[in-house]
Image (tube, rainbow, N blue to C red):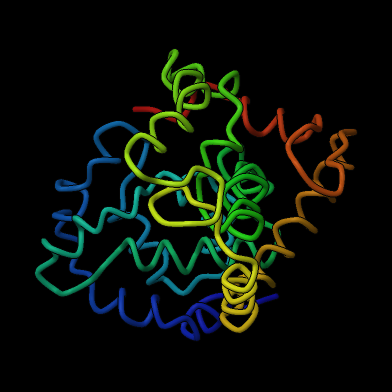
Length: 236
């Protein structure tokens, strides 16, 4: 594909997010991610505004576009009404569609997100379902997840909720017809197609790396590679 700029212009987020950057740097000054990562939203907007395919492709294959936390602090401060976070949303989607996300360490983590958060939505109706979590994969939480999983049913039931059962309250089991409706929303909005793109390109990358992905789930070598890999070179 060539002419990435014109392709990005078909994304409403890109159109809404990019007006006329005057290179003032206010977005970078307010950006929380810029304080921790090797990340500068001002430079991203400048690179995109060149309309140069080589520069934009570098972004699509880079670590940089995956550092944004999408907090939209940049939107609140830009004197020209730009929203770099919207621009980055559009760049991420194009990177996923073209498979360029597999060229960066942070980008490859999209596979892990799809196999966890993405698949959880379809299977449980939740982005995060406590009963689907594996505490050993979240050492940063200490004993919290293990305690939640072991005690959640008792706690929720004492509070009048239903835990992984049909009824009312948080963490209740979502009826099948509601989950079917969620799936249809993803299909109509293009979400399912994007998930398929992530799977397809990730499997190609895994094959290149000599790793297996399996058809679903997280118990496979490629998932653990992208989930745990950290070169340590992402921070300032």
